[in-house]
Image (cartoon, rainbow, N blue to C red; front, top):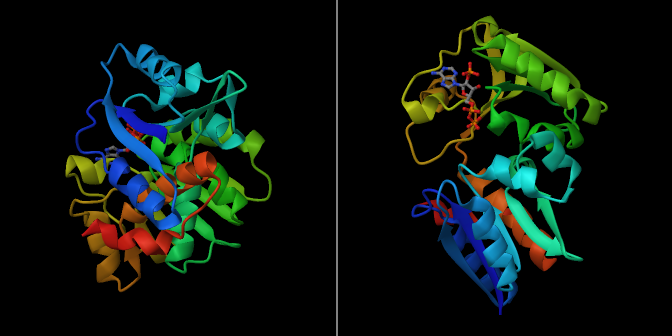
Length: 265
Ligand code: ATR
C-alpha cells in the first residue's frame, strides 16, 4: 500500500484525505492518505522524514507551499510560475514539485461548462492564489487576463514575473478601484471574503460568470454576482480539481471531477 499525506499547520480541517480516499475507491487503487502537522520551523525535517520512511507523495498546504517550492530539486513550469508547490514526490532520488491549483481551477471551470478558449478573464487579487493559476488559465486558451489588485504595484509585479512564461494571452494589471469593462469570467482570488470584508463590484464592470476561490463561507462577491443573474461557483470544485490533478500525477489515473462535487455538502 503506497503512503500519501498532506502536510500543513494547522491541518486538522484538511479535506484532502477524504478526497483522495474517494478517488482511490473510484479507481480501484490501494493507498493510505493521512494528515501531518509540521511545526512552523520544522517543515523540511517533516517532509524528509516522510520520504525517508518510504512515503510516495505529499500534498503541501498553508503555510508551507513557498518553502516546498524552495526545497524542490526539480519543478514543473507551472510551479515555477506559481513560486509555490502543493504536490511533492521523489524520482531518481530527487525531490520533485508541482503546483496543481491552476489546472484544478481549469478543470473545475470546464466541469461547470464555462468555456475558457478565447475568454477575457478578470482576476481580483495579486497574491499567491492568483500567481498559482496564471499559467494554466493562459494555457487553457484565455485571450486576455487582467489582474486587479488593491495594491496596484503588486499586480504589476506579478504580471512582470509571469509574462516570460506566457504566450498567446494578453496580460495586464489594474487597481481594484478601476474595475470596468466587459469580461467573460471574473475570479475572486483575494482573501477579502475570508476576512469578512466586502469587495464592491461597480455597475461599469460587466461579466458573464463569477468564480470565488474560497468556499464554505458566505461570499459578498458571489452574492453580488448572483444578484446580476450570472452563473456563480465557489471554490470547492477547485479544491477537488487540485486534488484530482495531484492524484493523477502520483497514480497515473485521472478521475472525473464532476463525480466528486457532491462531497461538498
Ligand atoms: P493568497 O496567498 O491567498 O493569495 P496573499 O498573498 O496574502 O494571500 O494575498 C491576498 C490578496 O487579497 C492580495 O491581493 C490582497 O491585496 P493587497 O495586495 O492589496 O494586500 C487581497 N486582499 C486582502 N484583503 C483585501 C480586501 N479587504 N480588499 C481587497 N483586497 C484584499
